[in-house]
Amino acid sequence: MRRRVVVLGGAGAMGRITLGDLRDTAPDLEPVLADRDPGPARALGVEGRRVDVTDARALRRTLSGAFAAIASLPYRFNLDAMRGAAAARVHHVDLGGLFHVTREQRRLARAFREAGRVALLGMGSAPGVLNVLAVRAAEGLERVREVHCMVGAVDRGRRPDDGPPLGFGYSPDTLLDEFLLDAAVFRGGKMTMVPPLDPGERVRARFPAPIGEQALDVTLHSEVATLPAAFADRGVREVTFRQAFEGGFAERLQLLRRLGLLDARPLPGLGVSPRQVLLELLARQARPPATNGAGERHEVLRVVVRGRREGRAVEVTADCLAGPDAGGGVGPDIDTGAPPSIAVQLLASGEMEARPGVWAPEEVVPVRPFLRELERRGMRVRVRRRARTPVRAR
Image (tube, rainbow, N blue to C red):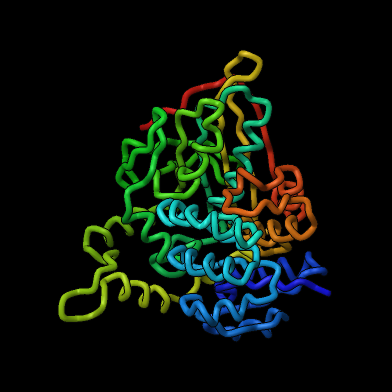
């Protein structure tokens, strides 16, 4: 009998990729799309169920008897999804809690231990793939002093005037918070908060062609919430997350921030927040036209680890590259949509130990099987080691 895997928020862009991956690569699992609007289920060839994750009773009914739930939701709903999974005694996987919610999610460890189930936090691309790459890069190092997480991307098939004035690669609401909230940086063995896109934290990095050299800025992310603990026993002193943005994108969002349009507080007398208005307008934007076949988007997820091996200072760089052909034509978004499916499949097969509790990817995901599955889906993983050189902020 096939075991059900319920994808909460499955009607969204990432949820559909996850459902497609489960449908195409997991014959022993039965994917179910659960959403306020389950309409896309038919086109995807999966079962659809209507559910509101904030309705605890309805959520528990939807998850009852399932093997696992994947929360492909805006991060604010992760706690609702987790509580529902624990109550229904099913495994939980999500895409990340944007640092602060991740910390709150950790407090549900007892509920999952008592339920005898696994909750895996932040199992997309960033966080997710990056966390596992950090473990891979640190293999064989007696000391780990620095862990730097980076994301670089480019779309060579899109003209500057194509599409809407603001194009989002994932949940606009989440990305807006990354620009609004202070970013976490673990430095000198302590957690500190800095302004998002702080110019003093900007670095430049060269990625494989066709991405090339890019400027990387700090934003709030969950990797920094969990990786310091993972490498504490090897003396880690610094953990950062930085990402690149296409030309003009960050400047446009900075303008919106200065105008107050990212504020989620209701305006006096209007009962609606500037953020709600902005999100509604963004939802009405037309999608960018396909200008070059399947597109020419490329993304690299990179982790740079600095430490010591056999008494010598080393720097290890681990890259995961996803181009337009990855995922059978899905493109770079496969590096976010496939990892939750892979994690559930590794749990179902026994390749990932089902240790009850709440875990980050670096704590429980088996490195070699996970990277093998990324490669099967057209992502390329490359690891190289060299003499250590410092990363300097500019």
